Length: 343
Image (cartoon, rainbow, N blue to C red):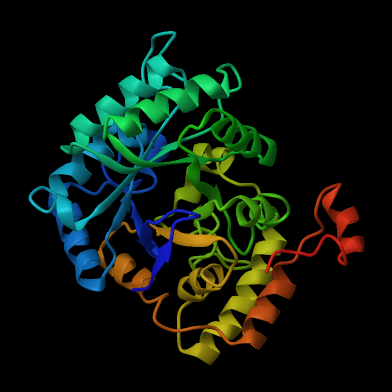
C-alpha cells in the first residue's frame, strides 16, 4: 500500500481508505448501502490492516451515528494503528442549532464523534458541506481551537465549490488559523467536473483530494449494463439514493463501462479495480475511499492497487469519459499557453 502526502502537510495517508457508510444500515438511505454490524466491521478492519490500509472514514450522520459507534468498536484496542477521518455539519438533531458549521454545532459534533468512536482525538476532521449562514471566520476559529486542544490533528472540507474553499483558505491565511489540507470530493470516470476548478485549486493551494464514490454511486461496479436490469442488491434500487446521488446520463455510463470492460480484460483486472486505479493516477488525489458490503467486495477493491494502467489505457479512459465543461472552463481551454490543465 502506497502512502501519500495529504495536501501540503507533513501527514501521510494510504492511497486507499475504507468508508463506513455501510456500517449500521439505519434508514432508507444508508440501509441501501449496507448493514455491517460490529462483528463484520471488525473482520473488515482486520483485512484492511493486513493489506496496509490504515485509514477509515465516517461521518456523524451515517446511520444516525451508528457507523461511528461500530467503527469505534471495531478498532478498540488498536487505535494507535489506524487513521480516523470523520465529518460533521449536516443536521444531527431537531434543534435550531443542530446543523451547520457554527462554533456551537461543530464543537458539539466533534465531542459526539469522539464519544461514539471511543477515542481522544480525530486525525482528520472535515466539514461535510459548506454553511453559508455562518461566517467562515467563526467556523475556522472553532476548528483551530479544537486543533489546539488536541481533539483534531488536521482539518478538511467536503463538497465545497471553488470559491467556498478559496474563501476559507484566505481567511485562515489572514488570521493565522489552521488551514484545510484535504477536500473530500466526488470524482469518478463518470463524474469529472472536479477537474475543472477544484483540482487546479488543490494543486495551487496544497489541498489533497479524498475521493468519495469512486465508482460513480454504484454505477461502475461492472454490474450495470446496457439492456440489463439492475442487480438485486444495489443502492440504485432506492429512489432516495438515486435522487440524492450524482446525476449522470445512462448512455454515458454504458460507454464508459464498455471501455472499462476492454481495459479490464487486457489487465486481467475487474471493472471496479480499473476505475479506482485510474483515479489514483490523477493530480491531487491523496486517497480514494472504497466501500464494501462484505469481505469479498473489500478484497476486490483492495486489488485496485499494486499495479498501474498503461499510458495508452489511461488515454482511452480519458477520451471515453471526457465531457464538455461549463463556462468559463470551456473558454479557458482555448488559452492553454497561460492556463494549462492540471498535470
